[in-house]
Image (cartoon, rainbow, N blue to C red):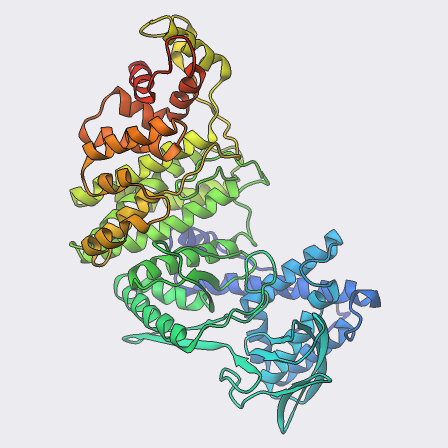
Length: 612
C-alpha cells in the first residue's frame, strides 16, 4: 500500500527473495513465468521507493518543482487511484518508463544537474503518471502537468499537442463524468473514449496483439513517452499508419516463430515484454537495446525479416530478465575498467557489460539453434547459431575465472555454461559453419588491431631483427608476450562489413539481394564482395591493393588474413588473424627505413613463423 502508514511495530515489510532454484533456472534460460513475476514484484517495490524518495526530497524546496504543484499532490492522487482501482496504479508502476524516469530524475537530483529540460519538468512528470493512473481508474481529478515543446504526456495512454510558444510550460488535466481534457491558455484537447485512438490534438499509444495458436502477445508500440530512450528524455517520433501496420505484420511473424520453435521462452517473454520502442530501419542490420531501469521494454529498429526480429526480441528479453535479477543480487563487484574482449562489440567492455552480453547472446544462440534444428535448409539460422554459440563459449572461458565475479556471478555463469557447452558438438552444415568461423576470426582480429598496443621494446627489437636479416629474434623477445590491457581508444575504423555481407548473402533471397545490394553495405569493399562470394584469390589481391594505399587499414589487414586462410593455413594468415596488432606495429617501425618499406604481407609471413 502506498496510501497507508502504520506505527504498529508488528507490521513489517516483506523482503523480496529469490530461491536459488529460481536463480539457477534464470541462468539456464528456463523457469517459466514464476521467477519472472518475482522479478517484476521486486521492480515494483524499487520504483515505488524511488518515487516516494523523490516526492519527499523535492517537496521540501518549492524552487525544485515550481511552477507545478507540490509532488505530494501527485502522491495523494496515486493513493486515491489505489483505493478506487488498484490495477490502474499497477499498470502505471509496471510501465517500463516509470522506471526510466525514476532512475534518471533521481540521478539528476543527487548530482545537482538539470538534464535536457529544467529540473521542474523532469520531476513534474510524477504528475503525468498520477494523471494517467487517474484516467485509467475513471475517478474525477484535476492536476497540472509539464508541457515540453507543446507535448503533454500521459504515460501508457498517449500525448496531447497544445499551442504554446514556450519550450516548457504547464497544462491542466481534468477528468470527470464528461470525459478528460488537457488545456492551457491557448488550446484544449479532449481525449477520445478509448485513449489508444487518435483524436484532434491527441495521439494515442498503439498496441499490437499477436496470436499463434493459443499463445497471445500484447505489446505497446510506444513512440511517444518522453522517457522511452536509453539515456536522456527524447521527443515523440510518431509512426505513420503504414509503418504501424508494417510493424504489426513482422511482429506477427516473429511471434509465430517464437511460439513454434521456443514455446517455453514465448510463454515467459509475454510476461516480461510490455513495450517496444520502434526505431527507424538501419540498412543491413537490426540493432536493438534496452536498459535495466526500463524492465519490460525493448528498443528495436524495424526490419522485414521475422526471424531476425524474433532473435532480437529474445536478445532484449534476456537483457530485461538479467536487469531485473541484478536489482536483487550482485554478479560482480563494481569494476568500470574497459578491459575485456566481447565478440559482439567493437570496443573493450567492463565486466558488467560482458555478463549482459553473454546472457543476451546465449538467448540469441538459443533461438537460432531451435530454428536451424527444424529448418535444416535455413542457412542464416545455421550461421547465426554456429557464430553465437562459439562467441558465448569463448567469452565464458575468459570470464568465468575473473576476479571481479561474486560467488553468485560464478554460479550464474556455471548455469549458462551447462547449457552452452553441449551445443558445441551439435552438427552444423559445412558452409554456414565455415562462414561463422571466418566472422568470429574477423571480429577478433579487427578488435586486436584497434585496441591492443604491443610493447614498444618488443616492436623495436623485432624491427631491428628484420633489418639484420635474421630468421627470428635471439633474445627472450622471441616469446612475444601478449599485450594484456586493451585501450578503449581505437586505432583505425572498422564496420564489420564482411559479416553484414554474409548475413545478406544467407538471408531471404540472399543470392539476388547480395548481387543487387552488396556494394551498398556500409564499409564494404570490392575485396569484401569477392571474399563473401567465395573468391579468396581475387579477395586477397583486392586487400593487397588496399594495404598498398593504406597499410594501417584494420579491415584490410584482417581481410587479407581471412582470404589467405580460406585457401590454406600458413604463417602469414596466422599472424594476420592472431597477432595483427604486432604485424602493423612492426611494419610501422620499418616504414621509410634503409632499403625501403617491406610489404605488410612479408612482415606477417616472417612473424608468423615464430608466433602462435
